[in-house]
Image 1 (cartoon, one colour):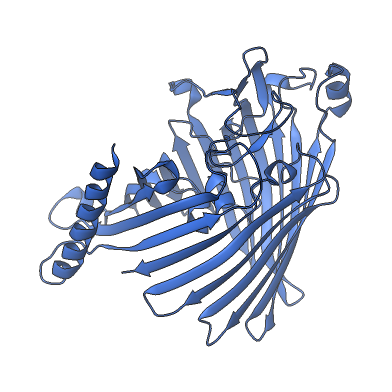
Image 2 (cartoon, helix red, strand yellow; image 1 turned 90 degrees about the vertical axis):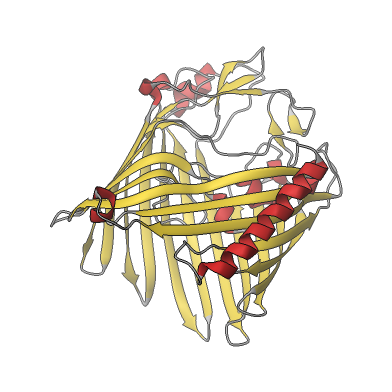
Length: 430
């Protein structure tokens, strides 16, 4: 779509939203809400991405609405609610390209007293981690995370059927996802990354390809959670059968082709009050069916991931939290034996510590936030400071930064060390 057509679409969408908000109170039609946002993220660091001066320059319009089905029909009897949320983005990083992003389009209904259904596009999430996901294997948009978009965009939507059951003794959540959707990771166009085929940090010079599972019935993804409260503590068990949402295995090294290997995950978590704050613990076992003995050097081994966390309100609108996260690669001796002399070797254990400090000021209209990842095993760090000012009920200004650094280019945050940026977002909500 050309620039002129894109601008016309954006202007038309803005006009329609303004008219809709204006007339919604006068007639019985669903109200539209949303926001307009301008965002810019100048960068510092030399690499081979499309622009060396900035990671993000975009205008965004989000519209969302709900409709409660009425009348003498089964959907009304089931208290059906239709929800739609969509973004229209004028992306100046790609020369004014207009991108539509349908984030939600679903129906929620209650066919039985103990059952809710949610059908359609939706954002799925569970687990206890703060920016760390063990049993939440639903797709994430890490590119948005690294360039400074709102945290809402870290979690990408899925097209799914979600069944929620509430029998007497526990609650059940089941999600069936027909079509696999991977994590959105840096690909070198906007954010550079470590490319093992290039042997270093790559941008547009990366030529790797990613092979996604075919859209077939046997590749449906199933995820489930059983949870209940025990006094003040919530405990949960998790199950996932699908594919690793990040491509960690090699399909054809000569053709520079990676793929998303099969993955089964089994996990548990607990969250509740501890020493005047809130504590959480979570564990997940990742079983790799395509390399269950760890002897295939090109396929990701099975793993166990552990997480403990704690957060506390210190009073005076100050809140602190910390997490310790550990990844353990199983069958590590077999993995080492299978490696070739020039292969990169991943550690058996990877440790990560995180900390978050949040302070509210000026009658809670100003929020200062600092989140830091630090891995003592990888010797890399990623810091995310930000300040958000709610100037009015409608206007919000956010300024922040993404500051990754690492000793080696192949670690999680070392691979992003050339993507340091600051970002500014100005939002008008309606």
